[in-house]
Length: 113
Length: 111
Image 1: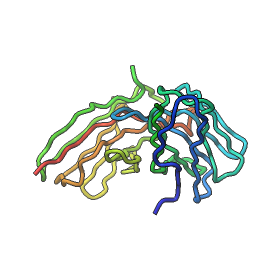
Image 2: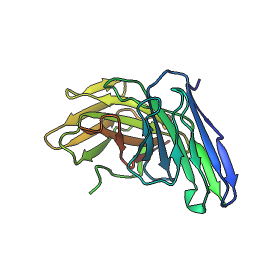
Image 3: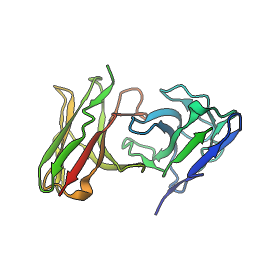
């Protein structure tokens, strides 16, 4: 039973389209993250948030943007999708405190044609 | 040099074998250490945290060597269901909310 939900799970879209990947968690976690992962490669942090109205860029530069208007919701937006954005996007959350244990969503696999 | 390095494998082992993975990290001030498991085309899931004194969970044993800056994962009596990629994860000082993932070590357990 998932406590963190991502939609869509799969998206195939043409170049230039605007897309939003949704991420919601029901655990009341303050911290939320977006990671990007290509097949067989490591996860790269692209955005994170410590709480409402807090967003930070991660280690990997990304043309995407995020917002955190509600604790449970952390959507990621690409204004103009390009083939180089084709990847898997994984949302995660963790609770306040020192544990830093991440719970991941099932991922959104994006293909830009 | 990457912050967290792992041998990508694959490690091909027969059922029942004991297998060990190492992971090295470059930041001596790293604070927290974890092993995650990721099945093919699935999301990573926490396997176990790694404590300074070492810890065990069933067939899995994790150890930390701060002096040499590596952590290890030992799997005893391998099962087919252990086949997955094992990700080493490190949290560094000053970025306590950001975890750095290794590329992962792929394990394939065969009959």
